[in-house]
Length: 448
Image (cartoon, rainbow, N blue to C red; front, side, top):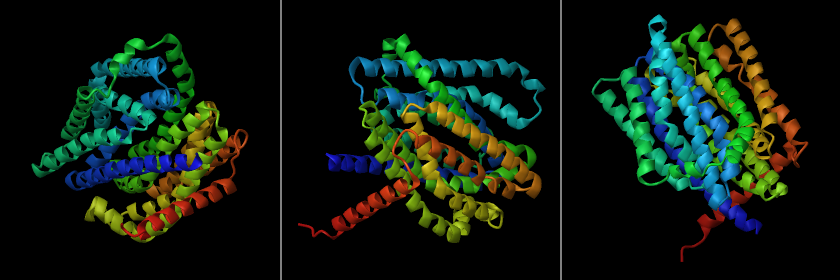
């Protein structure tokens, strides 16, 4: 029975990894075109907009994404319909509230002098609306473990965007306004695709129940707080750099940040498949298997990231050249990428600490964990910028919140499941060795 589950996990992981790898490759190509086609300051403003929009998007994702996986995964019939309908109802209500707030701010735009803020106010509401369907469908598909359909939908979104950006660059129309139009239109195209092929199941909204809505909100309120805090954790450096060092410095800082996609690919893939597997294990009261999945993924990724950090150390300058072009060679980008990759060795355990806390119904503890990290990063980043007066001060502050959050999450998890650093590494080593052996055997088998 265990061998069957391992085989299924391997298949899911391959599909998720292949999908995330493909999308991330397109995303990196998109960023590379933007870095070459647009002025450094404009690229910085674009990243600032994405950070502000990301906070709003975190509202929906925080309240509903983990809740969708937890309550929808493995369900059927009326329960599945009422859960999805309740998710749709809450997603629409939350998006409508954000758009209403945006509309209330619009009449006061004449009093705003900062062009970055004006740009955010102008495009915030329509961008939130355009991505609504895309988000809900992806939450459902993750719960269903339908990674092939997720890949199809994300390909439509990303390929259409890169094609339009390439056209914009070719015709020398690379402006922020045009880029925001492209982002809006590609989201609309993706939503239309989801509706046409019936992936939305939006009619389930009529099968929502008050009790299910209440249950999702009750669970999601801590997950929401965690996601918002996590997003702030990632965005606070963007805001500090923008307002203290300028959008040009932000463009340089975000270049190695975008190179970290090569780390985020396996992280997102394994966290996504791991959460659905842990949710099913938790819903069937199989806590030993839940602990095994968490330790397996965290351990395997930790061991894989060590050689990746070594490769990144020697290849950082080439990576910066390929992504950003010659104008970013000689900047702080390469050294910051080296630092990021060294710190990334700690990412898998920290990420799975948080995911496991959510799945075992302890989102409140996970929220406290992120709050600790947010407080530490605010203090460390402010001190770093004050001392160094450049983006090195921001980069060197990264490990402090990471270590604080990892230690807190690890301590809390040990109270509830069989979990230890030694167990994580030994389980990860065993599973990684097994995976390599299977691959080698498969490769050496004669073709009949």
